[in-house]
Image 1 (cartoon, rainbow, N blue to C red):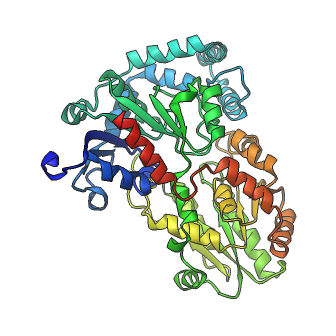
Image 2 (image 1 turned 135 degrees about the vertical axis):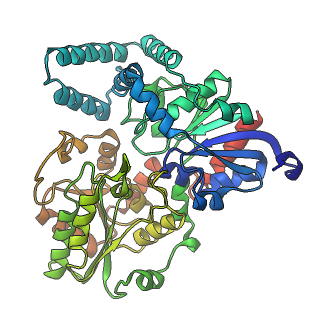
Image 3 (image 1 turned 120 degrees about the horizontal axis):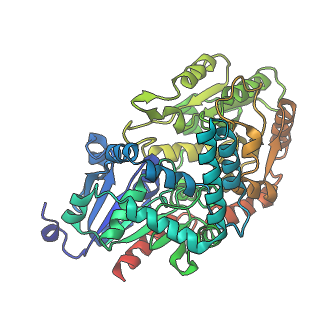
Length: 496
């Protein structure tokens, strides 16, 4: 397609949107960000591992939007052959500016040492060396920069050379610093640096600035959710303040666009709820670290069945998208999904809400309707129950009383990793802030869970001012307009 002939009036610039997984698609593509960019740029190139999937092409290809493949498999092959890159990445994930306290990364590191310092003499020597290197890097900003400079010089495969040659982009946008998950977006960031192309990173998740170590590449600009995140980037990650823009959270916009949400009658009709019972919402946690989700469901369901609650209630259980993780072509949590089916139908007034997962190639990719469904369920709930989850922020936006489950159901049967422990998660920096606001009730056992549900059912106004503080400090500015604001910032950035 001849874009220059068919897009008169648009800015003759090209931008890359790197979509590594479905949550990035939600943030960049299914919010107002892409809508704003399409109005102004002649060419937008979405780079995604599922570029050939029909639903994705149908939804996003447009007159000035094309899709190219993000070569995830080539990255994996490169990492298999590059022990040096793996070593650098492992060290980086435990390094931040040691002048400050960062409980999340420090705890990750302590668990890493504990889990890996039990092998033969060679393994112990490697761990000893890593420990000395991590501690040294934490003490010196100059050494941290030098360490990353060496890594970027040594490990910079030209995997997307053809795309850079074809499009010559003016800006590349990623959703991490190359330090989240497998961190594959660091390679395309390094390629962009090689060709002198500016990089903008949008911080995707609540814990990414406090719970992750050094990035694998240095972007030219960063967009954060909040001023708190900005401060963490400056202090922990050595990033200059003048290159950080606080833009809010694009996928939180839906909570302020109430005309788009389902009303109570529509929800009851769609999910089979009783219109006369109060709705309790339980947001499951990732089964990777939490094997007791269904125990909590069982506890709440029994309390409804045995009439231990002050009002007639019903429970909706939102299944976390990470239940559908694919690893090496196999559904990683098949057993956990089977456990859900065992309890589904066991109790009256308990309903399961399963996310619609569109792709196995683009992990956790969900249609835009999923944001509407989740926001509608939260809006009409009387009490929200979760376990150390971002759901707590979203329920505060909706001004719904929120309970955090800080116990392991009926008891963990088997731990495959030390980090699969609720006490470990309790110390995370971002969640400690939430607890300090006093906006949610932390429960340590079954009896306390039922008690606090009743407290909130009886007085839903409790902790309202504290929930408002969470919204003010943790959920970002530009309520309802974060997507368009971020889009406008990108437009001005490219036009500089």
